[in-house]
Amino acid sequence: MIKDNIKKYFFELNITLLVCTMLLILIGLVAIYSATFSGIKFYFIKQLIWYFLGLIFMFIIFNINYNLIIQAANYFYILFILILIIVLVLGKEIMGAQRWLKLGWFQIQPSEFMKIIIPITIIRFILIKQNKAFTTANLLKIFFIVFLPMLLILKQPDLGTAILLLPLVFIILFIGNIKIKKLIIILFILLSLLPLSYFMLKDYQKQRLYVFFNPEIDKLGAGYNVIQSQIAVGSGKFLGKGWLRGTQSQLNYIPVKYTDFIFAVISEEFGFLGSFIILLIYFILIMECFKIVNLCKFAGGKMLGAALTSIILFQVFINIGMTIGIMPVTGITLPLLSYGGSSTLVILISLGILQNIYKEYVKVEK
Image (cartoon, rainbow, N blue to C red):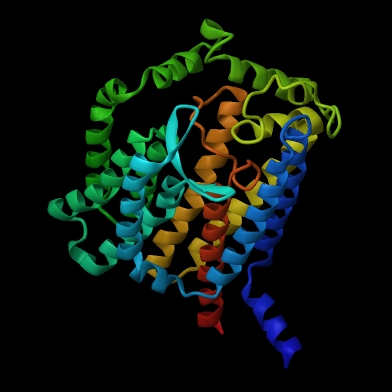
């Protein structure tokens, strides 16, 4: 009986997704250990705990029907709006940003969880309104759902997370079958307002944009991170310098190397081959997620699966892009490889929901 239950449990899991997840966690541990080897080693222990907690959440959520999560969306939304307000009042400030709530030995970044909560709240709204979901009045309500937490997140400031939220809305609207003409009009309106957002940026954020176009204008300031990261990536050549032997990382030339620039550490130590293997794992994982979205027969599952997959895709593209200098530095982590408790939990929770979408598909097919 126990053997049959175990076989049934693993039959309902998407094994490709699980294997890719575990491989990235193992690589993350190796990379974070190296990135903190010459500095503060307790980050490795903390990340090990976060991975363990994240996997527990992933397997719990795998067994919760995703429709129940969508139904509870409003409660999560209200709760985390209140938490974001608390962060602005009582949050811990690190490097000029007030994004974290300290919980003993650990600290949580609530804005990370809005990457999941905003999509499920919008999806619930669309499912309730059905044919009337995309009227002008309801579209305004959808964007209010987004802009309220977005403004609170920008206030922290956390530009990277805030920027990531808008594309998720467009993906949900597209999968939710909004008329393409309406989607183009909304996109045009938002793009026309984009220049105004420049005046809302803080000075250091503007400097990051200048440095994106020309890192050489501030070699020892805002451009330093990108220049050192590019040197690390290039110096790894084909096979890399070997684990714990990266000069850029071990001699601390790369700032925040265990979070934002973890890919630079990996590229230097394991070279082009190691970087290619990581990109291949991400590619397989993301394609498997899109396959789950395609298999799902229900609108709610399709919208939710597409949004969660897009979170992973965007973070991989943006993080690696800023590491090699083709994207501005935004502080977005590399999924399951960068150090960070909240980001690790969010990605593993997302993968747990995607596993449940697959599980529900398998149950229907049986």
